[in-house]
Length: 117
Image 1 (tube, helix red, strand yellow):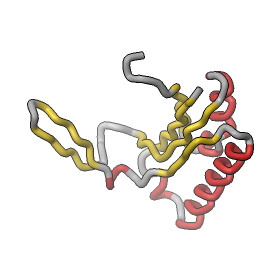
Image 2 (cartoon, rainbow, N blue to C red):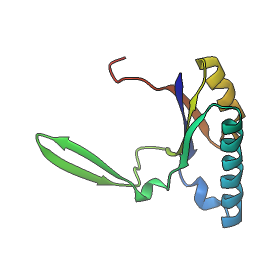
Image 3 (cartoon, rainbow, N blue to C red):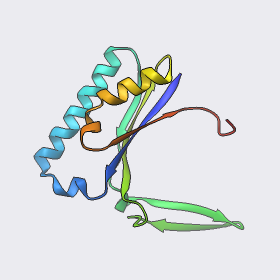
């Protein structure tokens, strides 16, 4: 069963890091991805740039509305994700607890499935 581990970072946390601290955090997360791959549960992962580079798109009454980030109504931003394939929710929770980002962010565990479920 597929699960998405969404990394919710406090807004502005990356700006507080030095470049070398950011590179070290990235390397640790890449190492975690390699470990998940070695265990046969890894499907995909990526880091996302900060949401000041994001644009939200809404279509209402046939008209597109674009909203540029950052999005001040949120205290956190999605900074990255892991997509894993594991037997059950409990296993996904255990892996989320192993994720290095859980020490500086929040890891949301969400099952992947159709939107009608």
